[in-house]
Structures are given as structure tokens and as C-alpha cells.
Length: 151
Image 1 (spheres, rainbow, N blue to C red):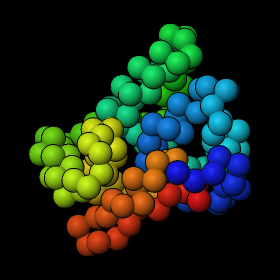
Image 2: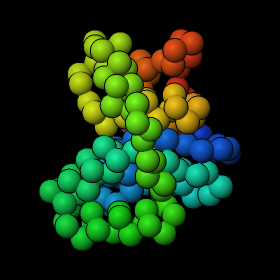
Image 3: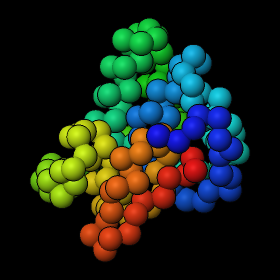
């Protein structure tokens, strides 16, 4: 993982897929990444954040456990207001997630991460908001890496 105190990149354009770590940090002021994620979002107000149902499920469960139920509900309210779009997967998403998970079997299995990689391929989004170094390994079918916008 990258250092929480490093400076975020700015001027990101287009849609960005959000992984769970930054979303957790956004709603948990005690998280080491909270200030960095807030700063990145403030510097990139025109970005459209997109996430997946597995990520949203993971974020809600972890916020409820680590912070409070109210934090998980705040996340859902924020999503409803347009803070993040929760993507509706295609009918082939489960098979594609399995294929991605098998292709990158050297990584520990993580449904949320694989769902982000699947959405990136399907939606043709290359930019990912993440603190997870596993996204340094994921590649699309052409071998191109995803771009971590927090670096």
C-alpha cells in the first residue's frame, strides 16, 4: 500500500471506479486515509465516482462494524445524492468476475476487488480510486494496467 500522507494527484477527468478503502476512509474520520481521500475529492470535484454492489456491501458492513450503523446509512444517503453511482452489473458479470479471479489467482480472492476489475473492463474505465496495491497487478485483456488516481 502507498503512504497515507503522500500528495494526491489532481485534475482527474472522466469516471473513476471507487474501491472500498477510500469509501471507508471518507466516512471514518479516524481512518489514516481520511484526510487524503477528502483532499482528493475536493481537488477533483468534476469526477464521477462509480462503484460496484460488492464494494458497497463491504463498505456498509465495515462502517457499521468499525464506526456505527449511522455511518453506513450516511454512506447510502450520500450515494443516493449522487456521491457515488452504484453500477448495475451485466448478466455476464459473475462469470467475468470468476474469470478475472482465476486469471489473477496469485492475489488473495476478493470479490469486491474482482467486481471493480470486471466493471473497469465492461465500462472501459481505466482510473481507480484505491489504496489497495492489488490494483497494481490487475490488467485488462490487452495487458494494460488500471491507473490508481491516488498516486
